[in-house]
Image 1 (cartoon, helix red, strand yellow):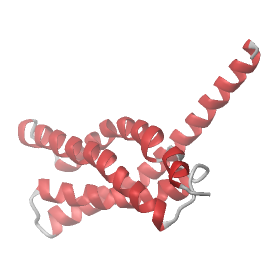
Image 2 (cartoon, helix red, strand yellow; image 1 turned 90 degrees about the vertical axis):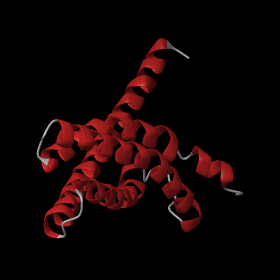
Image 3 (cartoon, one colour; image 1 turned 180 degrees about the vertical axis):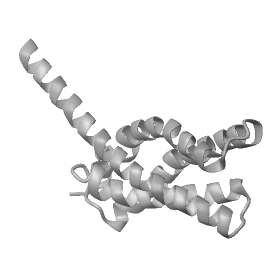
Image 4 (tube, one colour; image 1 turned 180 degrees about the horizontal axis):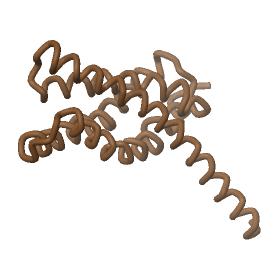
Length: 154
């Protein structure tokens, strides 16, 4: 393979990854709004403890984001079906969920309890800090398309 062809392939992969990252962030941006609205409703209106409200808001947002990622961000790699989507949702929830819930709860505890920061500001910061790890895990493991084709008997 010539050096020019290798560079062209490398540039194409970088461009595709960058465009996918932009789609990921668009979905994530909508997810941030979902999470912050749910957190506000649960904490300020329904008077949940801020950590319990955070966990519920994160889980609802995970499901929201999964549905959009499957049908938009990684739609070119996947064929959504219950048979393939349920195991993928489990992988998404275990990986992105662990990063999001553990990261959000740990950072919220640190920023709100210790740093005395407003809970909504702290949550926005926690979301941003967890997003890069979530993209990498999603791109390389959850929505890679390889595990789906390996199970497909066609």
